Length: 108
Image 1 (tube, rainbow, N blue to C red):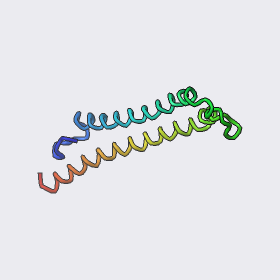
Image 2: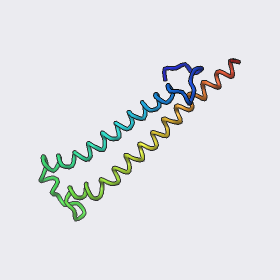
Image 3: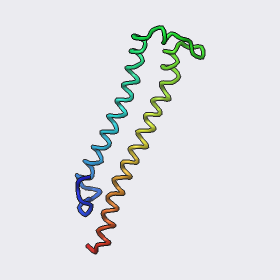
Image 4: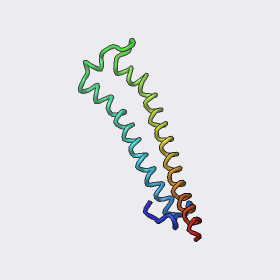
């Protein structure tokens, strides 16, 4: 955050905008990862049809990726998003609390 610690308030617009900006970057990264996976499968089928027709555990590779691996991948993206989002919030709150502690130590 660009605001000096003495001026940071957890309920201020600057604090919320900073947090929302960081969470937006995280959301775009997670959405991009999801879109690569979602659009990657049809592209793999189009450009590499022989490789995608290979049998894996009784399924073609296409169906194995779509039916078995796609859902755990989406869950992993969601898990990373939630964990990172919570970490961003905790980081912002820690910065505010550090600013308040420094303010008290200086006797202001």
